[in-house]
Length: 276
Ligand code: C2E
Ligand code: CA
Ligand code: CA
Ligand code: CA
Image (cartoon, rainbow, N blue to C red):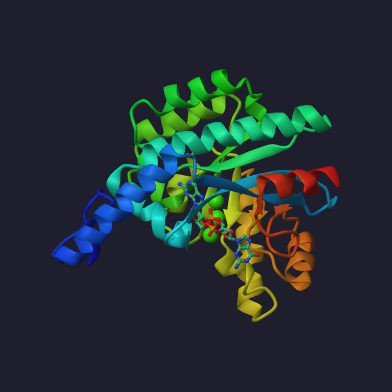
């Protein structure tokens, strides 16, 4: 069974032998997938809903194993975090995303910004700043084309060092957004002191728009709260026209979701950009 213990991440306890074997197989497979470049990034467009223009995209990791088939990130990322594999995987994700955004921006003369999900495990690493700096240098990407998404989980360990790291990342020219806002553990007093640029409204709130008065009102309140803190708002998981109309009326800046496009493999995203 999974449990939370203090500031640690998920730990297994009382695990059965067959489960351990399965985990070892999965760990080997995931490691091989990284090594053999069988992990892929998909990209989902982020749209400026006031102008209708695409301004960037979120990089979303995919693992398709020849035997196990499609393994959803919600399943293998927590596992990668438990085993520490998220560290090399996360480095690969950042580098791949930087290379892709640079090539598309160069080719089409655009200034798209790619958002990369950074695990709390990565953010807690003492050398994370160095890793990010190295990746910017090696890929030669303009830092203003890169954004980092951190979840509220990263703030469970809220302290000066976290604030410091975020400030250093921003000082490089990289934007930072708080992901899945409203679902985690952050309190407003933390948020007030965080050097971040944007707040992403979790899909669980967006999907309530129009279904109840409370549902719509809460999204409106989150948007006003973000604006009161001078943060941009990104709505995630927009699927219905009604959600879009309401978000736009509330002054929400950006949105992403199946209404616009599903996450696309790099070659299809390339065509999507070309047709813009
Ligand atoms: P997330 O960061 O909240 O990403 C948004 C998720 O919502 C993605 O799921 C995306 O495919 C899905 N989504 C987008 N639009 C819609 C929509 O309109 N309707 C619905 N139903 N879903 C929508 P995905 O790709 O399965 O990723 C799940 C989670 O895995 C992500 O949640 C993120 O926490 C994590 N993840 C994905 N890639 C990475 C990565 O490279 N590094 C880390 N650390 N985590 C990642
Ligand atoms: Ca995200
Ligand atoms: Ca999210
Ligand atoms: Ca979410």
